[in-house]
Image (cartoon, rainbow over all chains, first blue to last red; front, side, top):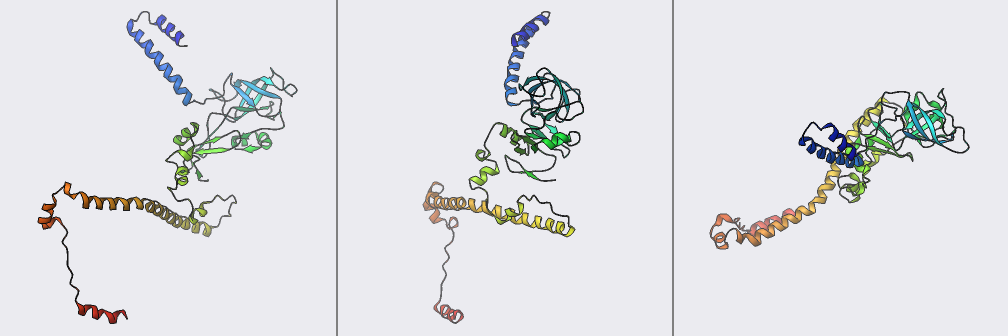
Length: 164
Length: 168
């Protein structure tokens, strides 16, 4: 990545003189800094195209990749619905690999604001597969689920073991 | 509305502050501010971090057992609203808080007292032994203003005899 940067800079800055040469070395050092900073301060972001999520119900799928977030320009958050493609599935399950399904995000690593002003975040990104009407395909849900599902996805809440 | 305790530093979290982290085993960690949250992410043990309440209680710096702490126990049964009860509770909270904080201050001051006494004793010793470094002893003897005056009190025999009927 650093080499590509250098080559790009040399192509662009051919008209400029040695000043840009100094800049490229500066850029390289700052990019190294950014990489070491990212290790400590992970910026949690939205669930967007190509995000792999864990499936936490017994519908048969194990891992699912987001194709489209049905709400939000930048991506889906906790409690939103997404369109996803099944990447990994159990051998005998209701959904097979390669199928396009809808899912509700039940756990997101990005914090979501609550009405009382506090914020919640979970450990991973997890999804529960639903059909077009919003009814869950599976019959069990594993792990904690947030309060945010209270308005629209009551069925998922009833199946949940623990409501965070 | 419920006032929670920060998992790391044990301070109260008021509404609108802090972050809740829900782990996949459904354990909820509440943090009062990003300082505590970042320390948690670094996997620091609050019992080893000096400024937390957990450390202070463990190492005897703060009071651990007191009857005033019983009032703060978490109760999960909701109480039916009663105006008199609410009023009395509010008054009681104020009083209990004052008593509790006084007792805690006393605990800390009594802990620090032993050091204070020791330091006074050492200072007195040093004054008696090393005063020669500041002023020569011959000067101290000559100049009466540098020492405390020695007051001699004469106790007469008649006064001692007079006191006896009072004691009886």
